[in-house]
Length: 291
Image (cartoon, rainbow, N blue to C red; front, side):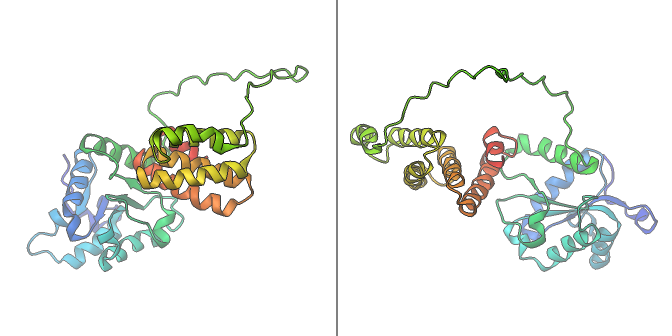
């Protein structure tokens, strides 16, 4: 393990540290955990908890960290966002690389907090959705991506499955789409009568019918049904439940089909944020919403 606290080289032209860890006092445990993971991987780290020892001038050390580290890690939490010193530190890193070409500012979110202002445009590393076993590899993988500027996988991707398409002169085989009755109440009443309108089975039936209406281009009817289903699922399951987010995504499709692009954007942006948090950024459902 390297000695991240050796600051002698910071006075030369070469940066003294790979990372300066900026955090607020209540998040010290997280800052130490992150610093330990990085030093175990061979990086040089400056962190107040370890390097601002008795007799050192903390203001000068802070200035050294901002000026002589290749990158600044901002340990983001609600508390950090209200910290005057934290704001000064991450803004200095951002000012040195406003376009993010060198990835000098690496926000690491330890809780589901907003990223206001300039922070909102900087891609973060989110640790809060992961458990103790997953967080370390997740952190180091994304740090490596930041250093190289690419997220190329270590193993080759699988060969894509070829999509079969009909020849231009040959009509495509008609899809087997059964007509959906326009009288939605007649179709849903048996489920709602048997289980109640808020029962998971009744809501699943309502959601599936809404999806079918979207596929048939009947977006107005789909919107009415999916809007009601989304309200009920948020109440019974919670706003972050996967089934709730699936309905939110389908409702966004309806709004898009109706030309209500601003409303669709608002809903899908919220859905994407929640799916990234609950499922992870690379989950198929998250990528569907992003698309």
